[in-house]
Image (cartoon, rainbow, N blue to C red; front, side, top):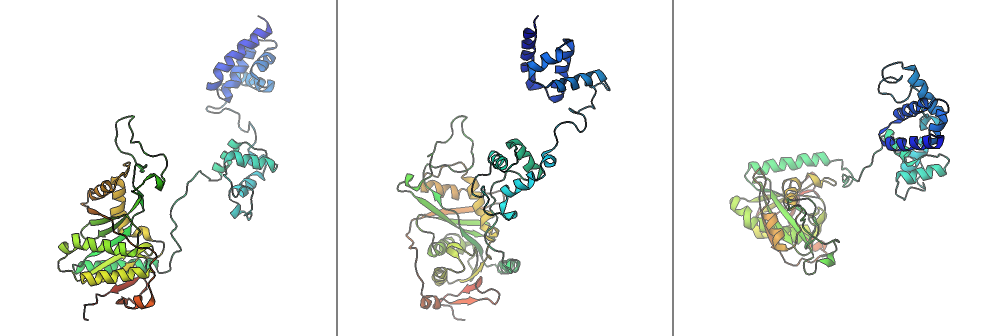
Length: 412
């Protein structure tokens, strides 16, 4: 057999075995083939496999040494200690600082980095580093980032605003007010608006059981103009902390302070007054923003109207800025509503109301819901005179967060 035929046979075997061989096995296999060919074997194997002659010679030396039962190297090792290329950190000490400057320029004092406004993929980082005189591959960049405690991460919703110095004190104040009201048998509710939802055959997050290969088909794009005549709805909820019950009004118009107050009124008419027939007061815990904002003048006007209608003294405690997730309604009502309709396209108002009203939990949560098609004007300006007519009594501790609205017919 001539040399060309030998080389072709070795090349074919090498191509078949290559995917299952690591560096050490590859070296020893090439060495064994070269030794089997005797004279000129190293040159033939090197030409057939593309491996260097020195690598094959090292393999032959390791096979001949037989220092242990595993081919001359300690068990589990591919190279001798110290073998192989040096780490990039050693061969190019300036590489890692240059990489960190590109990944996090604000920490390196370079806010105008060329990659500040682009996608920082490993290939783009490698290209930029190479251009700066640090030739490196995308895979090597990924390894350097992992070794430097970087990882691929998405955004996390944690920041709602600056932390107020009286944040914890307000929490304690709310807790004390809630316990005091409950001890007197007076109702305490948590209120808030859930995020707006598109009505129609649109994708809804989550999964539910379906016949295999028969998923619910929905619109590709979630555009409001794809839902003619349906639009969006705003579920506004009232959660009774004592009774573990909730009321949700599904509004089809603007989320305003009057819509919020009307929802509280509906809860009182449909659920509250039956459960608390002797109630004289109502404590409302709410976020500091949105339609029930502590700074919203119309919220105060709407509460005065509610107080006059029900005859209740309305006590209000707002959560401090950046703490809306601690509002009880978020994790005792709304999260269960979202879980209940997961994976279900909200194709109609009737379906939304039924899904909310059928929400239950193992702890006995009961929810009622109704559609509110009333119109609520947005952008209403409240004058100082109108605000001055509100019978508001502010507490000494953060009166902008803690106050009471007294009914006009009440005589103190």
